[in-house]
Image (cartoon, rainbow, N blue to C red; front, side, top):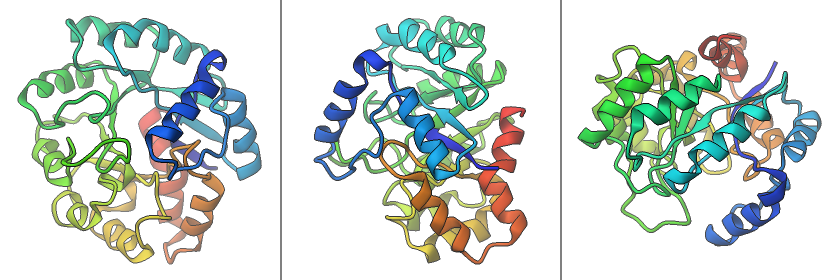
Length: 264
């Protein structure tokens, strides 16, 4: 069983335009491996050996909430689980979170660069608290994004700052806690209650860095993710399966932790 906890796709009508726009925005350094449609994602899942993918929609403005989340709810199947997209600049965060819950979505995705907020800003804590009170998982983009100049709006230390504020809620920092910040992840974030995913991924952090973080953080708080269509799950899986992890550690990362958090 393989669950890819971090993927992206778009409505068929905008998929090509969205993928091309994002490819240009990142300076063409992340070449897409799919066309951005749900079908393209599932085709790659079949090819790469992925059983279930979790789609993570990103809102670039609050007005997209209804359209994007209704689409997200509509694409769900036995192979696809979708989180909801949430924008912190909303004029009513409780209304928006309640709407996401009404659609049966299991979590919300936020992107601090596209949405221009700091992950540990005091005003964000009330949003986290309310989302957690509704049983939602929160997943954040973490660290470097090639479409934006530094300094970035998140860091492993900032995630560590809010680790004690979660009150039992599940918060996930993508890209192993901070893209291109993995020494800081080891120093500040590993060992906290924040969950990590492996997305974008083994081409960028060393196997040694990954193993050190697993040892300190615990495989039970790390989930496999590819960030499709920006990384091939097959390549990420090939590296992960080759590492000197126990069979139980691999199962936790590949599916067991995600199954537990998603209630599968």
